[in-house]
Length: 383
Image (cartoon, rainbow, N blue to C red):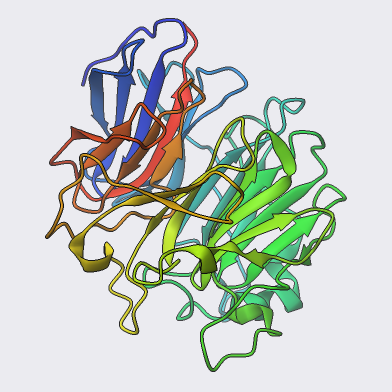
């Protein structure tokens, strides 16, 4: 493993995989990348996130063979790591009773800029946790973990995604630390305006799988929800049943994926919002046929971009294989940097890392032969 000293304004790509984590640091032009890793080789890393408030602290959500599900913390950009003293965990129940056990921590979100030590975590099965000391110790947050209504919406451990139900897409409104969102697969999208004391579902307008009742929150399966940095009143969502936009104060989602080409559809996992233009967003469509193969439609991968809030979509595939490329991109495995033009990045379950320095107009393979990629985050480093 090597370490690096970041240059001013340099971008790092934080890669979580089935067998460890890697950091890729780009030069000023984002043309060449230097690799740092592997970290946690052999362990599952579902999410690796840099704290934007100090641009030095990293948290890694890991599932290890000997420590089980845990969180690791580094305050020196990955040179050294310490395990959380108290990782996210459901309370123990009296002997003889059946309680829930965290299988893995799936999602990490830094708190508000005015709350420098706060982090949030989502787990599988669905649980919401918070740390007030920078990720050293974690505790259940808000009470939803044991709320009878929420437990019903969460379903059983047999429900949800193929690798287990998850709480994800934890969002903190940059204007107000008391305004929070999260999503559950399955179990819908939820909002709090009182700092997490209470949450309420926002599922109106969202479709569900044919044959199920859309009025039942349990059946809603949001894959990824993103808030627009330039307009926090706008959210985009990639759902099991389409692409959506929500403009507050409305509580009704609009299915903007209906404007995608019908041969491609609007099913997938990741969603990316432009850092400065709330009308621009990207998705990576996957085959949403009845068997749900979760691969690029027809083996012809492409990113699609909207520049008018979903009224129309444009295919972006320059540099990709033209055929026989059956890629899968998971919900945390696509991201954007804040440069101009915007850099886009995604990783595939076949271990390829792709990037674009031109907002998706042209693509280059940045790395091959990595383990199955679970998450990709772009972060600006502090020199």
